[in-house]
Image (cartoon, rainbow, N blue to C red; front, side):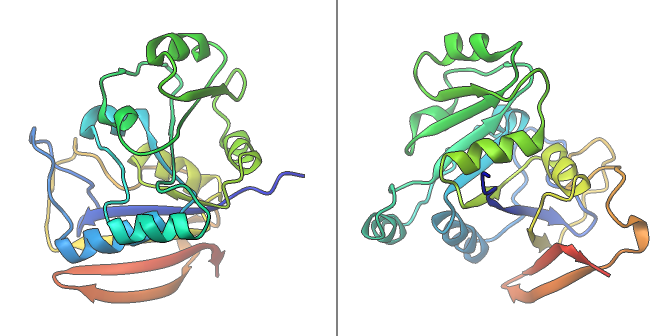
Length: 226
């Protein structure tokens, strides 16, 4: 039986729960010290996953930026960079995005109807695999487990965070809460409406709370609900 990876959701959000605002430029929610914390978590992960919408909107490189952390990964017998993973049902990806041209290995997980489209678009820039006619998160995690991913860091977006939380597939949540208020209903949120396990009264276990300059960092164990 395939061992699924340990799933860690990571996000920076405003006090009112937004990942961004509606301005064209990306809203800076975190700070330098917290960005360094995120870099450490990336370095400790076997794979980093983002959704295709997040990739199109933010065009991230999604790297371990520290030379020392990359060197330590290599010394530990790992690739310098974690595997970079994205998921898409539509297959609407561009080969020009930064994701494909920086870091190490890349993987696209998609569905039967889009797999050939993605392979043609990327033309060898990433490994492409289908999990069947529909995007099933259990099968996505099974696929990553078969590829040796023991620790998966999920960096968004809100739709993916919501789906994994609703299906009780997240083992840990890291939230960096910025002292900002967005207040724009159309802006992206960390979590959306869903039928979450245990309902509105199920309290998650808090693993850690600390201040990182002007950001509050909180770790939760979502499967440990009382």
